[in-house]
Amino acid sequence: MKQLLIVLAWLFVQQMYAQQRPNVIFIISDDHTSQAISAYGSTLAQTPNIDRIAKEGAILYNNVVSNSICGPSRATLLTGKYSHINGYKFNEKVFDITQPVFPEELQKTGYQTAWVGKMHLGSLPHGFDYLNILPGHGSYYNSDFVNSNNETHRYNGYVTDVITQLSKEWLDKRNPDKPFFLVVGHKATHRSWLPSLQDLGAYDNVTFPVPATFYDDYAGRIAAQDQDMSIEKTMLLTEDLKVNADYESKSAWSSYNRFTPEQKAQFKAYYDKVTTAFEAQKPTGKALAEWKYQRYMRDYMATAKSLDRNIGELLDYLDQTGLSKNTVVIYTSDQGFYLGEHGWFDKRFIYEESLKTPFVIRYPGVIKPNTKVNQVVSNVDWAPTLLNLMHTPIPDSFQGQSFLPLLTGKMSGWKNESYYHYYEFPAPHHVYPHFGLRTARYTLARFYGEKNFWELYDIKNDPQNLKNLYHDKRYAGVIAALKKQLKAQILKVKDEEALKLMTE
Image 1: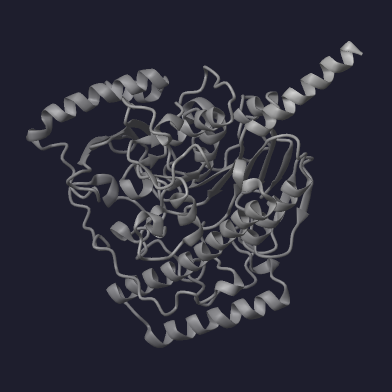
Image 2 (image 1 turned 90 degrees about the vertical axis):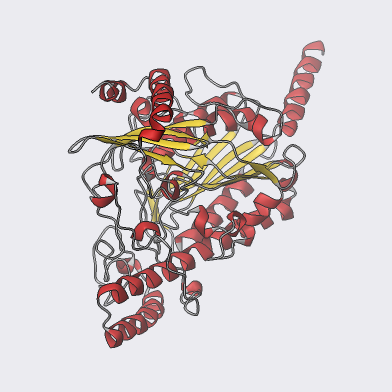
C-alpha cells in the first residue's frame, strides 16, 4: 500500500509539473522578411495574425542569423551551434544526425516533440516523436511528405494549408497529459512564389513603390557589384514570374506537374492573362525591370497572404481548445530576404535586409503584451532560449545564450553583438563567402575567396548599407576596436578558418 501511494504521489507530481511547463509552437517560414510584415511597420502588406502574436507578446527588431541561407539556419536552430561546428554550412548537404539536437533534451524531461512541414536538412534528425516533413523544398501543390519511418506520402492541396492541417491533427492525437514542442515549418514564401488558388490576383490592384535603392550602383562595394541575384538580370520570366509558364516542367521547383486538372485550369487561366498583358506591353530596359519587380511582389505577397491566414487558423485552434493559456507561440523565418532593395531578391549577405529576420513571441503571463526588444540576438540563441522557456537544462556545448531574460525585462548587459559566416559560393548567386560582426551600431565584414577585402557600415547613419567606410581614415579607431571584438568572437566560437583569414 505504501509503495502504491508513493507511485501515485510521483504521478501526481509529474502531472502537475507537466501542467506548469509551457507548450511551445515554433512557426518558421522560408524567406519571409520583416519588410513584408505590418508589425514591423511595413505598408506593403497587412499581416494581422503575425501582428497579433507581436501585440500579445514581444517583437524583436534586431534578431539576426549566423548564416543567411535556408538549411544552415535550421541546422543552427536544432543544434544551438554555428555552421562550422554543426557541419551544415550550405544547402543540399546531409545533416549529421549523430550530433545532439535540443529536442532530445526536451524528450528527457517529458516533452512530446514534433516537426511538420519544411526542414530541408536531407536527413531525419533524432529528437522527434513525430516527423512529417517535406523532402527538400517540397512542392506548393499536392506535395510529398516524409514521415518518421522514412515513408513518403502525397497530400493533396496547397502546401501551406496542408501543413496547418497536419499540425492540428498531431495536436489532436498527442498525449494531453504531457507538454509538447511542435515546429511548424512552412515552405512559403520560397522561390518561385506560387500563391494559393484563393489568393491569385490578391495584389493585382496594388502598385508597389520601387525601393529607393532599386537602381543601386554598388559604388565602393566589390561583392555587391559581382553578385548574381538581381531582379533585372537573374529573375526568370518563365520559371519565376510564370510568363508563358511551362506546365509540363519537370523542374524540382515546379508544382505544375502535380496539379489536378481543376487546379491547373484555374492557375493557368490567371497566368495566361499575365502573359497576355506582358506580351502586349513588351517592356524593355528599366520598364522591364520594374515590370518584373511588380510581378515578383504580387506573387510574393499573395503567397505570404496564405501564410498569415494559416497562422491565424492555428491561433484560433489554440483558443478553441483552451491550449492558448499555456502555449508559447513563436513566429520567425529562416533569414531575411530582399524585396527589390539594391535591385535584388534572395538573401546570403551580411547586409541588413538579408541578415535580420522577423521574430515575434507570445507567452501569456510571462511576456508582457507589446514588449519591444532592440538588442542584437542571433538564431544561435534560439535553442538555448527554447530550452530555457521549457525549464530544461541547456547543454554546455551550445554556443548561444538564452534571451528569455530580455523578453521579460530581467536582464541588462546583453552582449549586443552577433557573429556571422556565410560559405556557399559560387552557385547559385555568386555571393562571395564572408564572415563578420554585427553590433548595435556597426557591421564589419571580411570577404574572401576569389577576392579578398573588408567592408564597414555604420548602421545608425546608413541602415541600407550603401557606404563602405572601411577605407575612411576617420573610422580607423572604430575598425581596430571592431577587429578586436571580431577576433574575440572567432576564438570563442572556434572558427579556425576565419581565424586564419583574420591574420592574412
